[in-house]
Image 1: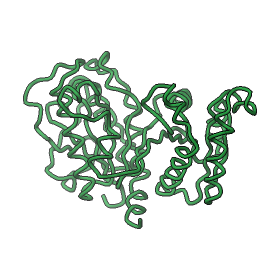
Image 2: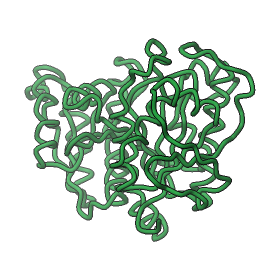
Image 3: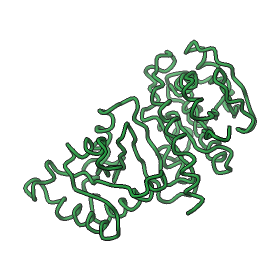
Image 4: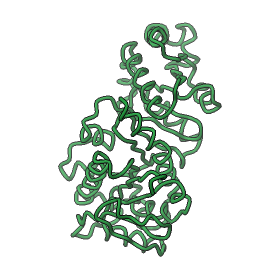
Length: 337
């Protein structure tokens, strides 16, 4: 067990596809070759997921992660026993939202106590979470606050491409207004720190341009001249290896080819489209800046197909593998800092 990271897997919203993709992922022997997976969830939800998917995996309840068998063919899980009332599959449910949040809280507690080495999360539903009276926008905000972290970032990883985001869940108009030299420079330093924690000794960063063709010297907008170039120069002056702005229609391609270790995307869809067009199912969301690694699938609860047993587990499998690949490095580097 000691040579493989112990990864906690939260079950997500039990009314969505989370339980199905978790059991499907753990039916893949490759997962057990790279990590020791323990599910943080609820027995009835797992039993229902096995029924829906037609899988005959043994369920092995444990009180603590260290008690797991970690053998392919069985699922070690911590049962929070928080689904006493049956939850309708495929519908928004405050009870499901409350249970999903409790799975997350337990996973964070285990990680902070060094009982697991990292966390991979199945999808939650924001409406269900809010319906349960829990005032968090999403996973990242939960992990940030509940671990007392200050400088968390979201990073997408797919193939050889890594993408950070200057702005995310705001309107495109608001995002453009937040493309400032100060904000970009500060985010670049956080990106560099995150990459070092993930094992990149001298990370190479690129900044995507905002305007077509990088603004063409001001013909198509002057944000590159007024904000992005000064931020890049400021970062370089302090020792960062960063280039940009580079036109968004080429910078992600170049990064995937190995010219850069990561790209700073300026707004949500700029980076999301690049990653998901490369490989939708294998795009993994990574939260950096935590005391441990946390990864997630990059899709939602898919209520429209929940309960049908047809949801793909590829993204869940990738999230578990990526968590395993970074877990020991993140813990080691956090201890040093």
